[in-house]
Amino acid sequence: MFAALLHFKLATTTLAGWMTAQSPMPTAAPVLALLVEAEAQSPIEVSLYDGNYQVETRVLLERDGSADADTVKKMAFAFRARGGSEKPLSPKLLSMVADLATQYGRPIEFMSAYRSGAWEGPHYAARALDFRIQGVDLRTVRDYLWAKYSEIGLGWYPTEQFLHLDSRPGIPDCAWTFLNGKEHYHPHWEVTARQGVKRERHRPGS
Ligand SMILES: [Zn+2]
Image (cartoon, rainbow, N blue to C red; front, side, top):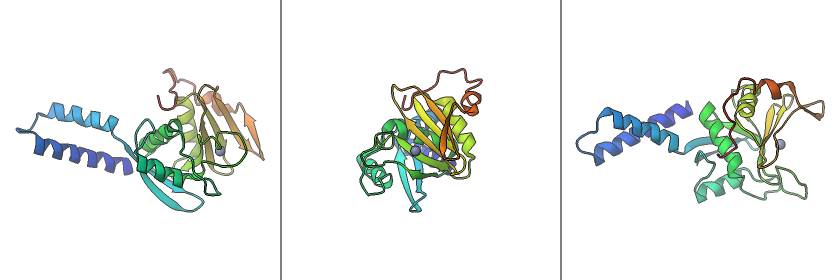
């Protein structure tokens, strides 16, 4: 719904631009090419829903996970640690968030992002997100991410109903299922989700 609306807005805005700037009207082919190009390069509107505070934040994210300064600030606040401290999430992680918004066109509901404190780990380095996509089966999102990306950590929490996703540049992939209070590494889906994936996997943000 969301994505379709955005596309419509883009199309009408682009056409309006042509109609005022160009005379006479260009033929259909260049307009179509322009629309396709605009769609691939334009930022995506993302709805971030804080599952703890039940607050929605809407942002415009570039496909590579970058954003303008105001949006970076807005996201740092939305993704702040429990104690209130802020650290912007890594663009590589946010590029995957932009991809998920493009793919599913639904709000991304998150439970945990940046965590402050003395611990090490991807949440503390602001490159991890615990989330679900409203209305989409966790396993669908899990398999989509695992099939497409490398240099990530991906945990499936079926009882708690969320996925942990982190970007880990230069570090091998890691998948796990969290059940009965602990991580089970090398789950069955680690293999099945990547079966038949012949294309080279993306590194987040590339
Ligand atoms: Zn996590």
